[in-house]
Length: 226
Image (cartoon, rainbow, N blue to C red; front, side, top):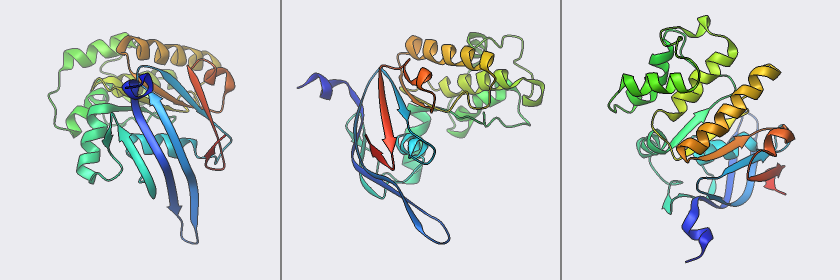
C-alpha cells in the first residue's frame, strides 16, 4: 500500500456542489479531486466566490454533494443520512468560523461544552476549563461573549472546536474579524494546538502569508483546483 493511501484522511473524487437560489442554480464546485493527508496543515486559497468555504464545508459534512464522492479514512460520507452526518461532525470535525458563532446567553465554558451537549456526550467541565486555560482564558471561564474582546471570543471558539478531540480542524477565515495583533496570536495558537493535538488543519484564507504557514496550499478558481 502506498504512503499516500496509508495517510489519507480525506479523499474527494470528482466532487460537484450546486447551490440553488430563487432564480438560478450556481455551480460552486465543478469536479474536485483531492487527497488530504493526516496530521498535516493545508490551506485553501482563491478569490471571493471561488468555492473555498464550500469546499471546506463539504469536507465538514455541512454542504451536500451534488455529484461525486467524499471519504473520511476510507468511509463514504457523501451519502450519509443527516443524523449520521451529525455524528460524523461531532466526533471527527472541529470548525472555527470567522464570525465566532458563540451563543450570547452562554458563558465561555458553556459555549465550549455546547458540541458535547448537542451530541449528548459526557460533559467534563475539567477538560473544558483546561482547554480555556490552554487558549489563555483562565480568568474568563464564566464570562459571556459580550464581556469578551473579539480575540477572546475567537479563543473560546477555538477551545470549542477542540472539545471533542477531532482529527480534522477546519478554520474558515479565522482572523477575518480580528485586528493585526489578535490575528497573529490566534493563528499562532491554531497552529500550535494543531501540532499538540496531531490533527489535520484545513485553513481557508485569502492571505498568502497565512497560507504559506501550511504544509500545502490548494488554490481554487471558479470551482476548480488550479
